[in-house]
Image 1 (cartoon, rainbow, N blue to C red):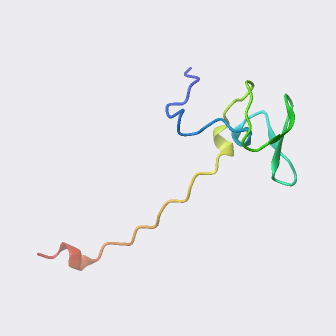
Image 2: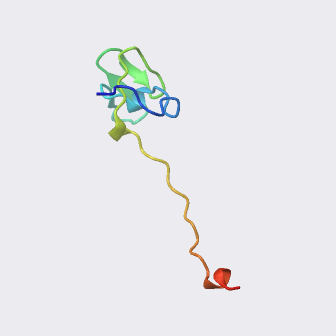
Length: 72
């Protein structure tokens, strides 16, 4: 099975996305079993990307096409 991401450079290593870390109750740090309390944007050698922790960016709303645009 392939272990590397196809777009590895698009998602930098952050404790916020790590499978091992858990978000603290205040939401400003991560509770890591390896490093303890860390910042959201830190990372370590034990980093393992979890796809479900990343919140995707909102898509732009495209205005519907006007029928006048398709008239000759």
